[in-house]
Image (cartoon, rainbow, N blue to C red; front, side, top):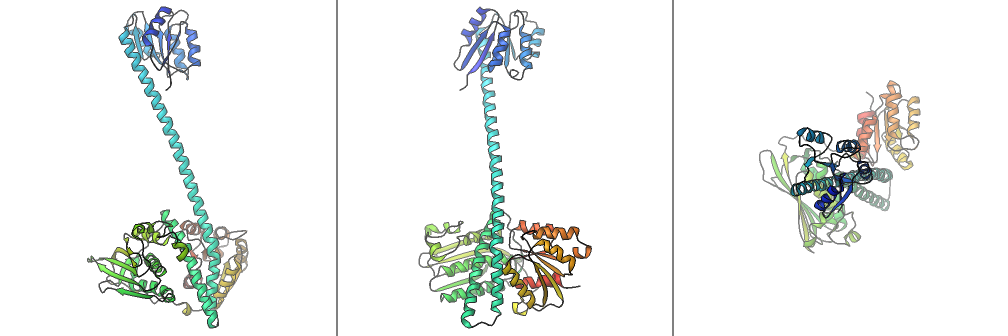
Length: 530
C-alpha cells in the first residue's frame, strides 16, 4: 500500500516535535521543516498528500506559502490544514479557507481533536486514491474493450471479405460447370455418357449445397438472414423436396414415403425457400444415415384456428440412430453424433445447426427422438397463417420450354473462359445476339460502338470491375447508353455485395451459378425492346 506523506511546517522546532509524536501512524510518512522555502522544495520533490502549516512564520507566512502551492498543478490537490496561535477572529479563518485550506486548528492544539481530524483527512486521501485507481482501471478496461471491439469488427470484416472472395472463387467455376452440364444434357449422348453427366450434376449440386450451408450459417451468425414470407403451396414444396431426393433414395434401395394429413391446408403464408431448405436438410440427412429400410415425410396439422394452423413436418428413418447423450450435440455447429461420422458419411456438420436456426427465425422449433440402430425422428413444428382463397401460381416453367427471343442483343462482361463459352452457347440457343468482353474497360468501349438491349456484367474482373464500369456508364455515358439495363452476374450471395451492386446502378442481380429459367426471365424483363 502507498505511504501517505504528511508535511509539517512550523518555525518552532518544539511544535514540530509535539506534532510528530501526536501524528505518528502506520502507513504515514512524516516530513518536517521550519522553513517555508524549504517546504516549497519538499513539495516539488515529493507527493505530499496533507500539510499542516503554521500561519505566522518569518520571511513567508502560511497564507502566502499556500497560495504558491495552490497555483501549481503538481501541488494544487494537496489538503492543507492551517495551525495558528493568532486571533480566532473569523476573518482569519475566511482568509485561510479562501486561499485553499480545508481546516483551521488553533494553538494550543487539543491532541484528541487534532488526531481525529488528521485521521479523517488521511482516510479522505485513501478514498481519493482508491477512486483514482478504480477510474484508471475502468479507463484501461474501457480502452481494452474498445480495442477488442475494433479487433472483433476487423475480424468480422475480414471474415466477410474472405467469404465474399471464397464465394466468388468457388461459385464462378461452378457456374461454368453447371452451364456445361446443361449443354451436355441437351446433346446427343450414349447411355454411359448420359450417366456420367448425371453424376457430374449430382456432384456439382452437392458442392453448391456445401457452399450455401457455410454462407447461410455466416449470415445467420451475423444477424443478416432474412425470412421472406409469401403464399406457399405446401404440396409443391413437399413434391419438390422428395422429387429432388428420390434418386438418392433409389440408389440405396430405400423406400421414400410421403404422408399428408387431410387437415393440412393447401396454401399457407411461409418462406417457401427456407421451408424447402429445412425439409431438404432433414430428408437428405435421413437418407444419408439410413443403410436400409425406409425414410418418410409426414405433414400433420393441429391447433387449428380461423386463420392459423400448427403444422408438424415429421421426417422418420430406419437408420443408424443417435446415442441419447449426443442428441443435443447434433444441433451444434460443426458437430456430428460420432467422431467418425464425417469420415464415413461426409458432410460439413452445419446442416442441422442451420435447420435449428432457420426454424427459430421462422418462429418454430425442431425436436428429435432417436434410438441407436433403430432410427430417428426429426419434427419441425411451426404456426402458419392459412390462405383461404389463394391465387394459384401458374405452371412452373420447364427448361425445355424456354422460347427463343427475336432480335435481342446482349453484351456479356465475363473474364472466366469456361463461363464465357457456356453463357454464349446458352444465349445463342435462345437466338440472342451475344458479344463477350473480359473486363469493364472494354464494356465502356463496346457501348459507345454498338447498341445493346441488355448488359450482363460480372462483378469481379481485371483492369476494371463490374461495379466501376456500371458507375461510369450511369454517370458519364450519353443518355441512350445510360438507359441500357445492366444485370450484375454475382458469384457472391452476401447481402452487402448485392447492395453494393444496386448502389453502383445495376437494375438487378443474378446469382452464379444461375438457374436457366431465371436467366431467361431476366432477359424477358430487361432485354426485350419496347
